[in-house]
Image 1 (cartoon, helix red, strand yellow):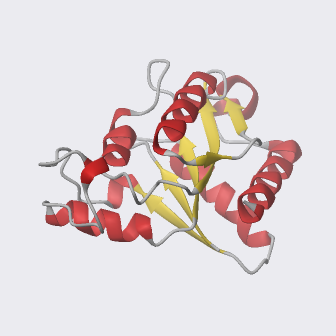
Image 2 (cartoon, one colour; image 1 turned 90 degrees about the vertical axis):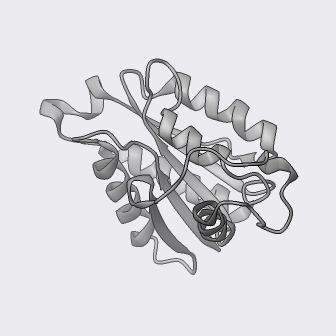
Length: 177
């Protein structure tokens, strides 16, 4: 199974890099038969608007060349882990914009959430759950939420042992879906 780890924050000094790198380390330590790849939104060259609603696009035939490349990348994954911040009690806008460019490439695929923020990005994770439901993604039951208070002493990401166990449970659920 080919699993994409989608990093959605593009802010300067973003914490998502630390969280996603740690998630990747946990996944690689599993030494299982699955592949894991970071999908860093900051490295994508996307236009935020498309000519047609993505739900009506067939076989990746998006009008915009950049969206076609994005669709090819996302379509190549069997499942996803979204590493999400919480922006003003919701999902990061740039991450949602990138998500909204596509439809069929997300539909039917298993997905998990790893959130970080003031309360572990709980509101962002709830909003993502609603969004995933709308496009027919299969959200696994295990999620990870890392709060700034408990997991970022002195601004350094410190997930602790339970965090590693959560990531392993997430991977188990994704690969079984």
